Length: 216
Image (spheres, one colour):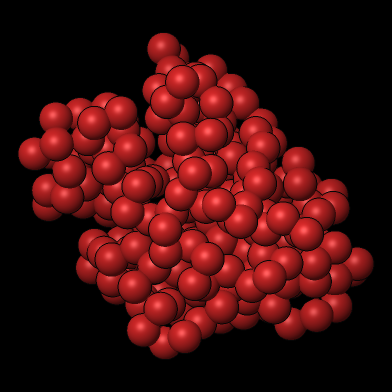
């Protein structure tokens, strides 16, 4: 079972797929058995940018002879250019899906949407706090103190939008794991457990695909 990088366009104001994007796709591929096991009906990517990971997963689920269920896919991004770019990626690959403009999980919370698969490649780079949330490309990577300022806003929202059997996959930098472990994130998700699905060094960075599920 393989995921492939879908066709996508480029927009100057939208984060272009890079090593972290492809690592996220590889992490999803590495855990496909568990994704299929929960029989997802709704898959969502937050901060979709060009929409490559969610489209990759959607294409696999659409084409897989082992998965006959219709899956709805949704993407969310605060950048209106990214919303258009993600929608273009969906269309280029024959995926009927919607991209919403909004901040993190708020559009899902407002619509009482529950996701089975949640994907997030957050702004994780350690930067001065004043760089977080700036317009343009900086917003796609500036994570503030410990690279955690956006992540720490996101995690407490997760229980409200993830189904009981749902899975969250998220990219993190080694520096985001305060103390070197997942504990600093799991304390924000007390009913969840987590693991590192896949790791890779990209230049001078050590990147991880993290997986979170509710304790059974």
